[in-house]
Amino acid sequence: MAMLQEGYMISPTLADKGTWVFIDGVEIPGMRFNGRGDVQTVDNVPTIQRLFGKPVIVPSEIVLRQFREYCESERRAIMQCMVDLGYSKIPGYDGEYRKNPIEDKYKIKNYHTKNKQGVEPNGTRFWSLTEIAVPEGGKIVVYNLNDPNKSSKDLLKLANEKFFNKSVDEQNMIIALTL
Image 1 (cartoon, rainbow, N blue to C red):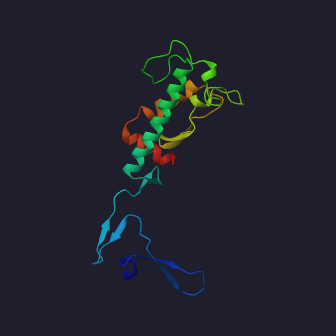
Image 2 (cartoon, rainbow, N blue to C red; image 1 turned 90 degrees about the horizontal axis):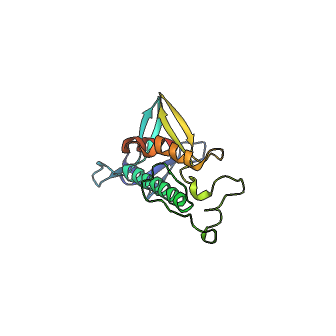
Image 3 (cartoon, helix red, strand yellow; image 1 turned 90 degrees about the vertical axis):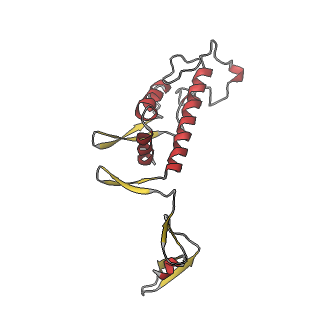
């Protein structure tokens, strides 16, 4: 305990005997010792919660908020690409629609154009948030948000229903389960 209080990490050696190696300069996540040996908790560390009898590592609020912002940014980029391409009735979009889609000469290859598999343009599909794990009915259900057999609109509608239209606490749990 004294070695931990002095900031050392203790690990066994690879030898068959009971020897230990002490490493200096490595902090134990979530703990910090002061000079008197008292433990201080550190903010922004993950916690472990149980869900349906299984342990789930839940990142700190700062990390969860950053992931929510990543997800929302990707969603907005998808909706903007759909607007640029002239899609109508975009799920979750409440802005103005274009009267005319952008001209072909301004389209970015593999973003505004169909890919080799012939599915809708990559800019209209999720590429970071490709799946989400959602607690439903006492179990965890995984939804694929990049299914090549479904339309971009259907996948955006599914993402809105299962993630974006949920409360912050529900979104946090979905992110923790998905990670």
